[in-house]
Length: 207
Length: 207
DNA sequence: ACGTGAAACCAACAGTTGTTATATTAAACG
DNA sequence: CGTTTAATATAACAACTGTTGGTTTCACGT
Image (cartoon, rainbow over all chains, first blue to last red; front, side):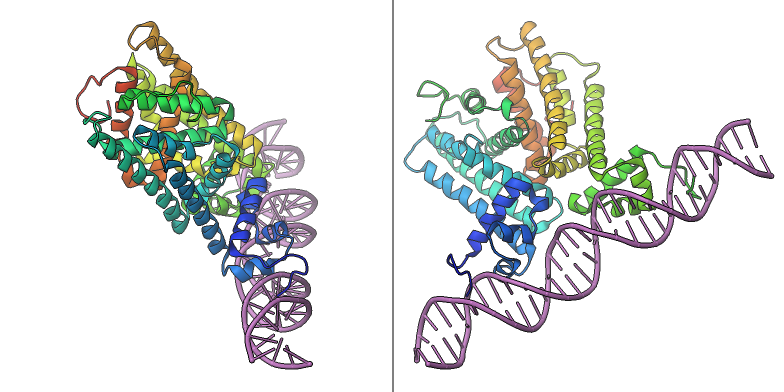
């Protein structure tokens, strides 16, 4: 071992250092040396835990996706009906600094994913999961009669994914155009007129 | 001059060569040398027309945005009412190979834009224009009574931008999930239930 | 107390990058 | 024809990249 002061570093810590470098300097500046420097270490730390740089990036993206799914599950627990859908959106929309960082990381990888199959599959995985959650909730709502039977859960789920992803992308490029209240206004407006469900509580803030 | 066979190259041609390289090999592989090779020329061609690589990329993105706006104007001309909004969407959605290429290029730049102010401003410009067009049309529709007065044109415009961008992003990552018919189904479904306007012609294909 | 092996360091390599400076070409013009 | 000059080619530079291999450190089980 080494590292006089401080314990040994894990793969997760390396990945998180990569996140920080990407957020600060951009993905194209996230070299192995830069990531090592972020850890106050040398390149050996990185090359020990990861065979490739590709493997590191994939792992970093995978862990990011995992965190998103975990947040989604946690947010959803303990609520019912249409509120469960709003809870999902609560974690996917760029409402707070944490979600914004997630979005910024995510979008940083999208460009690379255009020419990297494995990264693209990782992106797909996240969208598939998100879509599935929406679809499950919509089906339940149709069954319980809370929303019209005319609603096609599969298509409506893809629409919700698109709407929330569009807001996320839009926020990164034009933050002023999508403050938290407006994000909710758009989403609630959609749910209300499309699914025929109006908000229970007053105000547009978080539930 | 030089170039035994073939006339002299313009800035636009260099930019378009850059597009091709980006589409084929990804933005991170679009080096000055690779772009020159795409033109069957040497780096001198590129460095002669552009002082910087940053300037080249900015120009390439600017020209891409210009093409999008031109397409939008052309598609909109000669139609009225709600159809004008659908015509805008016709050019922003990834419906055909041409639009998909545009989207792929656009998304390739987004990552870089996260850490490059000028590129980000160029992205903003496109979204601002798109938003403005939607808002103009929505205002006109409210005035003419074609859609409810309760509609807030500003907010609804941002919602439309988000929805179409979300579909664009979603298509690149999960093409199967967003075939052309489904894109229209989502968009028309939104317009119908949110703006209270149903399609005139039958079928979900292009107008 | 001592070896064993995990964890990290360090140096070097070959390749690529953007940039700059200089040389070469050929078309246009007088 | 000769000159000029826009357009391209060429060559070289220093900086940076991912990757490899050898070396050092130190915690732990015996």
